Picture 1 (cartoon, rainbow, N blue to C red):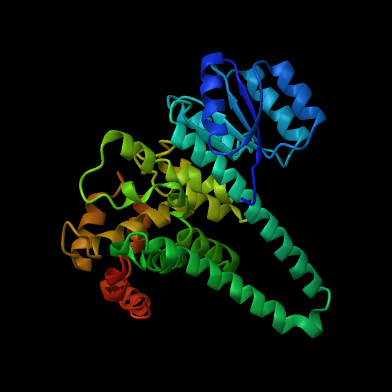
Picture 2: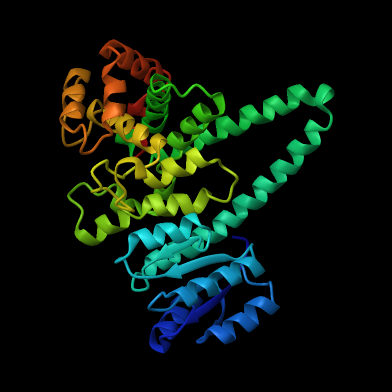
Length: 363
């Protein structure tokens, strides 16, 4: 952010609104607030100078959801942060997927509210950059013959930037360095075995795998790098990263497969995953594919608390969780290839990575 940003705050609970306003003012934001829907509508519908609106009202009934839809229709560029309880995750996911809300947080978790607001401002900066890139790309395409090579170079830079971004995020936890690139290769191989041959879908699966943990950019290092077990509050913050990541990238014109992997990569086939508790075919296929690829890399990689295990052990563990953690058809696709195929993918991916010892010395 380049300077103080303007936030609109609606809170029906006066005490909570005052506390939240005081907190946000302390973070150098400009705040305008209201306590009723009528006040809010008159200010937001008549003015378009707010970057983000934070709404806190309980219960969240149909009339208030319709109110949010009206605000979204009148000011589509407004970043909407909705504060609600953790008791209805499916409603939260639905509001995000419909585009009614951009970020969802608990009203009692001020750091989470701050992260949601910051993510909205960061997203707007990214959207501005992306819009500039799109304008430039459109200009290049209008001169197709003359500028074809330049356009291809820009696309290559875009892909390289994506991979470099995720490598940088991997380096926040040096023990999982290279993880995103490896699971992207595994995911594409599984997709092909499952008869997904469309090049665009395969590339979107690759991008979704690379970006799957982008929401962790908002999780503090004190939690991500904690050497011991996480307490309940820390674990709840970690579990926010799929939703945070989805909220961060869903308006950057990334296609459906990318967002599905980011949002649903911790769902389980038996419905015991998060953030939505989805099960079986409720989980998008690309997310079910990624879940197995992610587990395969985790099992066969070194971790501080255990040695890496071989691919035979990985196959046994994956088969053991067939129908519970993993989609049976994805497990069958994995088992249809010999282990040497998966070992070769890992070798060819990790052999291109820089020395991990060099990064350990810097951390």
